[in-house]
Length: 557
Ligand code: FES
Ligand code: MG
Image (cartoon, rainbow, N blue to C red; front, side, top):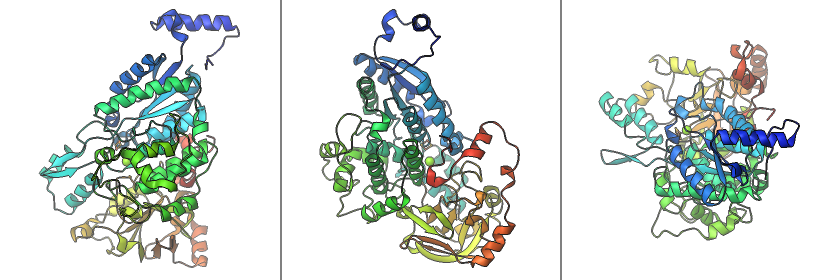
């Protein structure tokens, strides 16, 4: 049993004090004589993606007690995508530190991590790996789909598509108002293959959640039963592990990268895996990830790469069935939390006749994986494109740069009728990386300038050092590393420069000669906010955050 409570020099007195305070909490004398299972409470009125957390906690507690443990719920911060300023990514590391230190500080023998909204699961895993107490991830689960005029809708791929139609004048004010009530109709996380859904799949691939539980809808009774089962499992874990460091091996991360490609997952998933791996003393090799993507097709027909939603994926067999289709692409011997290997879980997957959501290698959604890693003089440290959700005609393209030097600059000038922009130009956003914005906002989904949108332009090549929501689509190059705010070449691009994107060749190039780039570099200054005095968490963030290829964790974590 793990009992690392603060001591007061005298072990007898320390135990006496703990007993006094556990009684103050209303527990009987022998309450400490059984495995103590921590449960993270990430409920927040600001986080509808975690709206079911109270019921999940109740079920986890029931599972813990049925298995003979003592459940102890404790709060950590909660982060919702739409209610976190300046960005949720800015706060992810704060939640990771909070989670790590509360697991470490309190006398828990194992812990159930309840998370769902995009940044919460990565933060919890980062913290749990560093604390290295046996941990099991419980996902809050995706929302059910919405409906409008006979069409099935979901957050937030359709939010973007419909807002784009509104900007183009095809949907009026009254209808867009009605739609705001139909895109996110239940508790739970966004139900397309965005970051939350991606992480729900990756925790199964990593083996740190019970198989089949990553995709269950938030509102379904199965979700409650998964919580109860996770509580029971946590009691078993308390008695002998495995600990996160024993589960999250190189093989587990390789399996996660493979699943990330096969689901057409969120680009954010790559940043988060890099951060979690770094906590485990490992690193994500971007070239290996790209190589996996050349072999592994997209097999899941979900938006934004395909047509459907998480509940459909779940009822088609979920992650175990996907892993069965992936066969030898996965390391079948990798361990999982319930003692079975990934291969055993895949072999036991449910077969659902006539489903078309989880494809076979013979009839994939896309012939190769969801993402590609690009390099070139514009991105010496790498960049990423989700080519499964891009326009194939634009994957090889040379165009004139139209540069926005900050998110604010982009917002100010994007819809200016006088903006010098054509459909075959390349939209460039700088100073939107980890330190630049700061917090690496999801601004990489640069909107199509209004005058072009109204003329029917649906996609353009867009490049930045920002991130993009996993629910977004388009020919969009992200995470350009190093970012412009630390002197990366992206910050040297000027209006009118030619940029060449060649996804088949995995390159992104700025067609400007080196002498001219050196001249521009000599004139370059970092953005003002980096030299201004800062304090508190912002100071910690600005001075220690790493680049995207290292997961945007703090350098000292
Ligand atoms: Fe929470 Fe989309 S806003 S998962
Ligand atoms: Mg998101």
